[in-house]
Length: 492
Image (cartoon, rainbow, N blue to C red; front, side):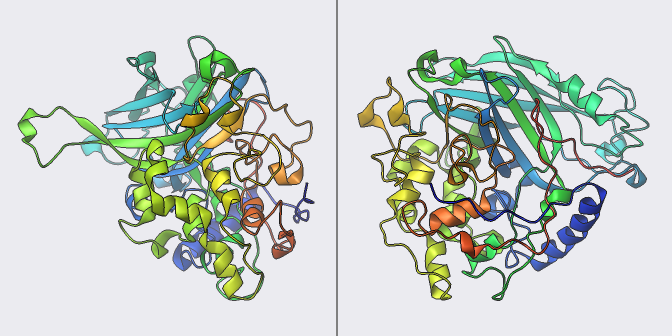
């Protein structure tokens, strides 16, 4: 196994990090994607989702629950760069989930790109504010039923097994609201706990605002987009402006036997996971009077950084209607038929951009290892070049080998033992329980992905591309107890 990346400089968290990264966020927003500091995960990948923040998935996590190894947890974060709420601003900051839409988490045990199980959230809103605007709280909010809470959302959660009708798991459950500041919401943790629900058959779920957890290295995005470590050659701090902002989170913990194909993780240990959001629409080519409401997929996310890694694009460097938009609108089981998409996985752009700057030559193609990384999982015989089977659905005894298809999914082996000392660099750091075997909130993506794009583990190491940063401000590590993500940032 290649040696892990050099140990990063000590991270600064707490009030100092929040103040510093809030300032950096402003600078990053103005600077745009060429600094890379405002781009991470799926945060700003495609024009269509940039224009529709409520559909913009930032990250998808799938991991064995550290506080209950018989459970697996899936998290889908959406609506990036939410500014911290403040009572000084009258509690007017608000980031609701979309109504008239479906947020879904999909699970694939057969390896076909189709959903064996879908978990679907739909939301409704109660807004008692005058003219539907202004503060979301009229005074301190101490429970989700407090009369001072003027803006409320509720959701219904359904489970849909392939070929069966939707099954309602929870109905009209309150959402933990946007944090309006410590004066108006003096104990947000209590609100989040009140919003947490036990699921029929075991497990828990909560929909809530959370502190952004993505551990980003700002220097990497220059490599992805420009081929250099920054907008000009030279090393930049790894400071992460996302450390100061919040996201909206769908957090779901369920028994592993519920996710595994045939309900048997011992025979079928690998599942693939991704998230989608669909909005109501209609076929404008037909008489609208004859149509019931239908839903059209507008957003999708499985593996992190797919647009950066395959096309070397981010934010304003993308073109409306381009491969990023087509990816977001396409069901996962259609990836196998998109020749241009498959070719991009076999010939990713960033190594060529890096080679053009003279930093490092690009590995020889075709890059079957990158295709396997995103579309197949780590397997002995699918081109991954790791040399062992880890998280490909070909390992599932009840999956049809002839039906396996290339599809972007976060693939997780449910039987991989919990790491006694998790390494944030995951598999490249010798921790088989980390990325790209699923993804934990504390996994570092940027450095390991850059190294794999440059040929690891079968080629020379690219760890030297990222020396220890001169300054690093990152989100506080996620917790080890459900719901894992930290409480949202908020001012007084």
